[in-house]
Amino acid sequence: MKRAATGSLMGLALGDALGFPTEFNDVPSILAKCGPWREMELPRPAIVTDDTQMTLALGRGLRTAMGRGLLGPRRMERPVREEFVEWYQSPENNRAPGNTCLKACYLLKTGKPWEEASQVHSKGCGANMRVAPIGLVPGLSDEQRSGAAQLQSALTHGHPTALAASDLTAHAVRLLAQGAEPTGLVGLLRSYAYENRETYRAHWLGELWTRGGDPTPGAFIARGWDECLAVLERLEAALRHTNPETDPCLATGEGWIAEEALATGLLCFLQFVDEPLTALRRAACTSGDSDSIACLAGAFAGAHLGADAWPAAWAERIEYRAELLALGALWDGGAGA
Image 1 (tube, rainbow, N blue to C red):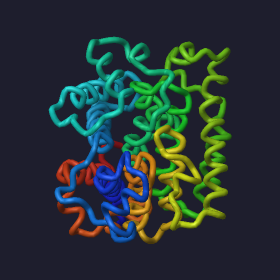
Image 2 (cartoon, rainbow, N blue to C red):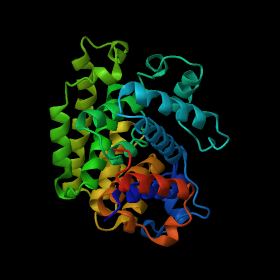
Image 3 (spheres, one colour):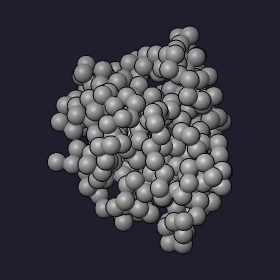
């Protein structure tokens, strides 16, 4: 048993910690500070960012919601909102969190309906860097997984591209956890995007679309899927032509926005499918949002290879290790179905 959930959550946190010191640095500066990128070591202590903190918040909210019965929008929204507000108020929320998450979580704290708190013009990567748990939790239908991925995004990032990228990221994690071959992954993601291009999850998203300025719900969500499809085309070209020794951000974007974080995280993983530490190091040595790119690369690699992908010397000292392992064990054991 490969323990995909444990592997994905641990990989996510390890990538986050590896990329934390290199975020906001260009590649020459990273190399000057850390040495050759293929030899980058996990910092001591192995401190994570808001990426892992919010992943755990979402995971706790899902665990609570699914402990109460069949997952639906009302059952999910309240505990996830509470966990996001708890994160917002925590003294440990001091890891350079994104402005969109801070603003939306403040509004959630005041009791505003989530539809009003949602930042509908933001497609920052803060929504899909935390979505992996929805691809890992067992027992969800395709409709539940898609709706839940988009709803957790919408609590903070309501832009249609943030919704679509979160859905696509969770789907990628799920496919890899279930044993999909990485060589066919991009094609599977493109097919999923085309199939869902005009599917607005009204049961989960309510009237959110009316804040986007689009004529119909289908037009609203199609705008997001189209941007994801465009970046998947760039990813396919990069996999054919890009030298792994060059900064991946040059091919698929710097990762500050949702669709580029997905594509560049996937690029790092797919260039080094059987070398998960190399994938994390490549992702951390990038000119863009290094911690989020590495976080996503680690989530993909861990879902594919399982818990044994990560050396004990790294996994044993990651921050929040006990909680990461607890959630991983819960979902690897099939609980919460």
